[in-house]
Length: 187
Image 1 (tube, rainbow, N blue to C red):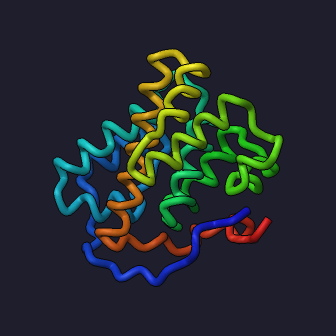
Image 2: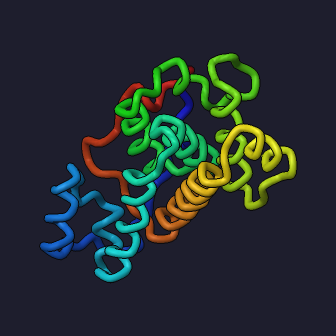
């Protein structure tokens, strides 16, 4: 598995406590006040807006969670976002993505462990991080997914491409003890 390169993170935003109501909402869905949320909590209304969209993408989408997590993991890898990578490799595993696929995500074009739908989502992740969805990617998405599914995948991929930039701009450090030693090993 090829994690994004570790970079020294120069924290640019203070990590503050979350509002009590937000902590209660997170706890209700098994969430924790991770450093990203603590940085966003410098503006509690923006934190609430962020969480509303991220929860919708996580819990209200109809496409399989494993498919969306593969898309997010590839986006994190391409964007070189270690923070996003470490959090979403764990979530991908919890959603049922196997180690064989996680190990192969960087080489998805040349291995046979991904379905046509997964390949379309992985191509979308790359295109979104690079800033332009190509015609071939759009055509394959249309072949593989309904209009509603494409909206979910495009919104998910675009959101997590943005999250990588947000993490970088705010210099959000990975939580102590969060690294998964196997997530950083080369395949």
